[in-house]
Length: 414
Image (tube, rainbow, N blue to C red):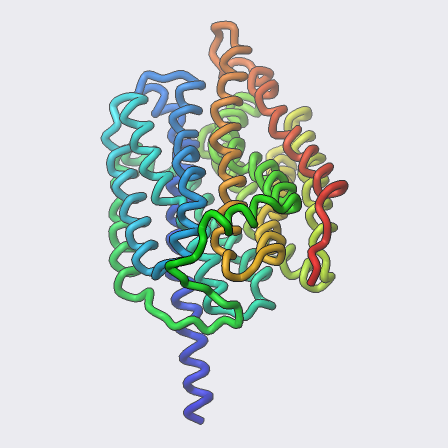
């Protein structure tokens, strides 16, 4: 009886610790996409145009991308509790600074800080998952992790949209700051555990970091998987996170709250499909087929969103499918883990996550520039064609991801 009770207590503690770290990811995603529902107010208050907004929002991904490899190396060497606590604090301080922004320069510095702290969130959850869960559950838990991230992004749209309308964007950010400070204290107090996983988590202060990085990046499959993940995340990082709301306002003549509600369907689709795709992949014992089908569904559904007018319900369904299709990005982390040694799993995961977040750094400002350059001096809200020209890049990302999965990615040896 004591052993049964100990096992139950151990399982509950494992889930609690996973939940605590996952809430950091939830918080980070809400912070990441919050500019999408503040777009109009930010452009007015900070006196910036579409390109300026895309650039300011996108710099978040510059620091996020730059910190991916360092975050993996740090997690491979040091106690996750210390790293995660500091990361949440940096993200929170960046959010506080953004709330006081009076122009694009200060706003960009704040977004850089937010991206620096947030860079650790996704890798943190996967590292803790690898430490606490058996290897056979990793694909499913990665899907669940992506689901939680998607719910965080949804929290960064509908609820934050209501708050912005009620109290303004600056006071809304102050509420996020309070949540971040509470989370910082909770992680510092509670995130203590002994590794239970059958996956070896090597902590070797004398490890050859350069040799490990060369080992990871010299694998051609790692690059194919990373490029696939980057392209399949582009719809979420550029459309769902920033340009989706203003596009729907312009193309479908919706209010900002209604447009945010519809955009949240992409995150809902991603949330529900990610664990299901992980479980399906495990049941099929295949990775490549689900990746290929995901990208194909995304290309078809997003193409219809851009080129046709639909009812509110049908548009929601298509956005749901477009978001669900991006769940292939979550499965890519399982492929990366299976292609690399356990001693460098955090660094390998971080490399793949770096490729993912590059999509936001590239696609957000480039789409903004394309929209702005096609306006010819008119308001971008007056003609949805301006948006469509920029958002064709997103459709192209789905198509190329499909081709990469179908033609270049191979099943890992298991």
